[in-house]
Each structure stands twice: as structure tokens, then as C-alpha cells.
Image 1 (tube, helix red, strand yellow):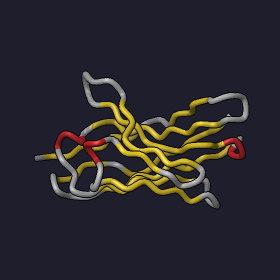
Image 2 (cartoon, one colour):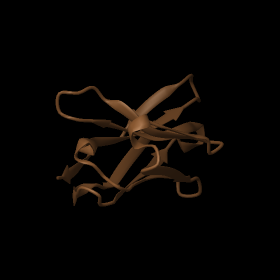
Image 3 (cartoon, rainbow, N blue to C red):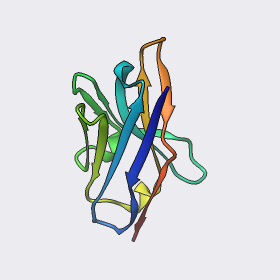
Image 4 (cartoon, rainbow, N blue to C red):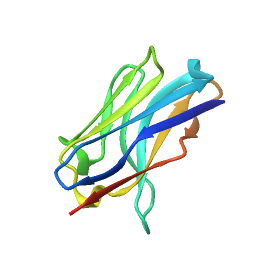
Length: 118
């Protein structure tokens, strides 16, 4: 079992920046990927960014060049730096961790609201 605690988020004007962080605890030795998803009202949850244990990353096309994901393995924490925010980035952002101890298992944070005003 992995527990995730998110922090960050909030309200920002378009063009501004916000940072999110997510700290993992519990069965951290099986963590393979860490990442962020988001879900806007009336839309499906989508992957925003993911980082593998070897530090490879992937991003949703809409955030490439604006968002940066990173992880601190010593602190078992993943970060998402969001720059040049747009109103369409408004959503609830969820931290996601995948473990491979018993096949691939997904764990989710409680979600944090990011609101970008125009």
C-alpha cells in the first residue's frame, strides 16, 4: 500500500505559475512511476506528466514546454512545476504512483484544485 499526500494548487491568473508536490509513504520500494493526472468538469481524467524511476518523462501535448515534472527519490516526492498557465489548465490535479511489486498497481492522491482565471 502507498499513501500519497498532495500539496500546492490554488488560484492563479493566466500566464502565472503554480507548483504541486506529492509525497509518498508506505510501500515505496515498489514505486516504478510517479505522475500527475487532471480532470476538468465534464471531462475524463487525463495524464498530464509522468516520470519513471530512471528519470524518463512524458507529457501531454498541451503542456509540453510549460510544465516540468521532477522527482526526489530521497524524499519519495514528485513535483509538477506549471508555468504559463492557461484557463484550460483548470482542473483537479491528482498525483498517481504506479508500483510493480505485484504487477502494476495504481495509487491516487486526494486531488488538488488548480484554477486559472482569464
